[in-house]
Image (cartoon, rainbow, N blue to C red; front, side):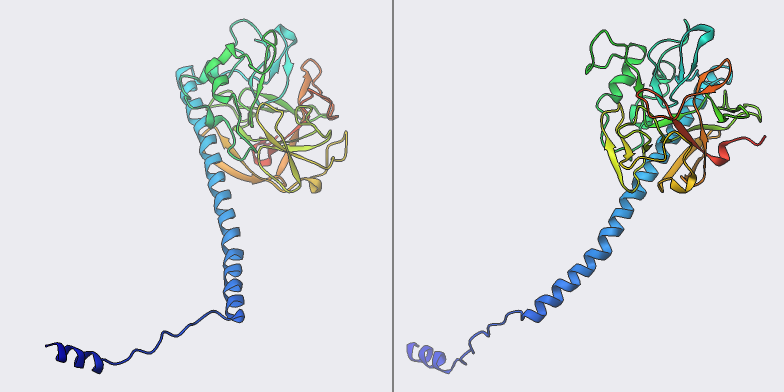
Length: 317
């Protein structure tokens, strides 16, 4: 038995030693070239996909404002709530920033100083009030919404009455000037069945110029949507994008100087439309309702500046 085993082992074929292989430099360079080409293709595609998701979230948020707002109107004789863009008391009240979610004071007794006081029963999650493209989270958004008229920013002195400025422009029951010479008015919708003289625009992404709440610098463009050569203003209630290079100054800027921005707006029937920063009209903010005087576009701290509306949101004359 032992002799047979030895004989079998001696007759076993001898295996050749394993050959040693390695990538050549040329092969490594080819592989790296292929990986670089794939990265060049996939990275922009992923970036576009993320931008598309953000855009769809923004459209959903705007729709999530319009539907509860119409539900409120259905429960309140087809009327939307008052605008928080009004400032002042009694017959002397005027207009200010349409992005306001909380005003500093009640305009008159019985009119709340916060959007939340009207819509809290219809909107639970305050995230729908924010454009998802803003360059950072808003620390106190939900806290502000839950507090309503009792909002007090914990980052400011307790004796200060705090306003709160969001990222969307809210245009229901709001008025502005489309032409400072002819005093032509923009009138936001007062309800779902407003007349032909009223716009159907409920809310939009913010795109503006020379707003004192958006500096530095003065004469800057600002938006909740990103654009080329924009920096971040994180000192506002809602972080926003601002142009780092100043605009033409205390004059309405020509449309050819506008940064390229893709924007969205929602209307009284709940549909959302996309539009471009090249397809807008300027709206001045009224500082004196008695003679329809507009704020100067000078970037002074606290001045509202210009707001750009989608052109098709302006009713025909």
